[in-house]
Image 1 (tube, rainbow, N blue to C red):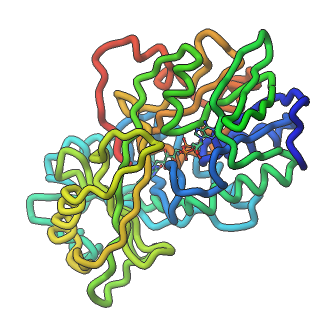
Image 2: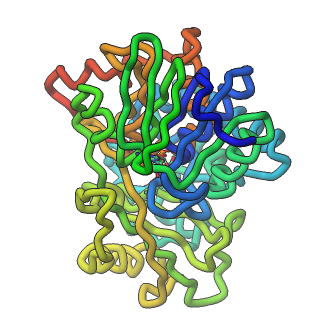
Length: 390
Ligand SMILES: Cc1cc2nc3c(=O)[nH]c(=O)nc-3n(C[C@H](O)[C@H](O)[C@H](O)COP(=O)(O)OP(=O)(O)OC[C@H]3O[C@@H](n4cnc5c(N)ncnc54)[C@H](O)[C@@H]3O)c2cc1C
């Protein structure tokens, strides 16, 4: 179907990454007329949602994300069924750190509290069971069998496909530059001068959200950071494919290293969480060599069956809030504008729930979780803490 410029849609979704696509699909399934606007192509590599995989896990220190993950797993299963293709693969999750690490202690406490199965492993036991990793005697690991990978670009494209098949209208290659609130209606205009109107707007614009929201009088402390990851090739016969190797997060350093087993790209994807520079998302920067050296040192110390000299790099954006928690709220002045951003490098795994939450905010319905941790008003409060991993 073609976009209609004089029609007033129920909702316009600004941004077609995983969050905007999930919200668009959730709303069109509920019978809303929805226009999804994206400046690039579906599945593009300039934002946050591209690549072969993302970690999905219960292993969080904050209970709210465990509760979100409890909803996300069935959400992914239902989406995979609608899409007719697998979107999640269980691999198990391996979290490691010094034996006295408060991170491991918090994970264990939460697993007990939510009756989530796990095993705590000594270094010797971990080295025997998971020979992909080498742990020194003073370290320990926690294994959680339900962690896994979500097939990232496949999930984005599946949502776009389902959205359009259900009658949603998508416009690509148009960059929104102006948003006007005209009473109960919202009008958006693209750089090329095209405009569309709707009764509701969802801003799910990832690293570009701050500027768009500032133009609506909402100044949010969002930063777009360019993170880089490298896929390291195995150096021997050890099987590093998903199914043979767990996802992992390593808490031996202030900012954790994380990784995913081989999915499509022939290598183990490894990143150093929250170490990328803050950038203008319209001005991508070259790879940071110092960051790569840090990741290579980690590979040498922890993953003896990978070749630290044989790798392929990509970049990707984090949209960080000061406390690394999401923003899921209505605009304080314009309740028909809903904001879903600030996913701070760990939002993908929750996409089906995020879509349902943002759709519920549009529809004025109860949300499946308490959203107070994600409220815009928290930025007025002091004492922000940074904790969460990938
Ligand atoms: C290296 C890396 C590793 C990660 N690992 C994990 C992980 O293991 N597990 C996990 O759960 N999460 C992970 N994440 C985080 C997760 O990928 C993000 O939280 C998620 O993809 C955010 O999606 P989004 O839709 O908010 O943003 P985006 O995907 O960036 O989507 C926003 C979209 O809005 C469009 N847009 C912006 N402005 C405009 C405009 N003016 N007009 C039209 N369109 C516009 C953009 O082009 C973009 O497509 C990782 C992220 C990175 C970068």
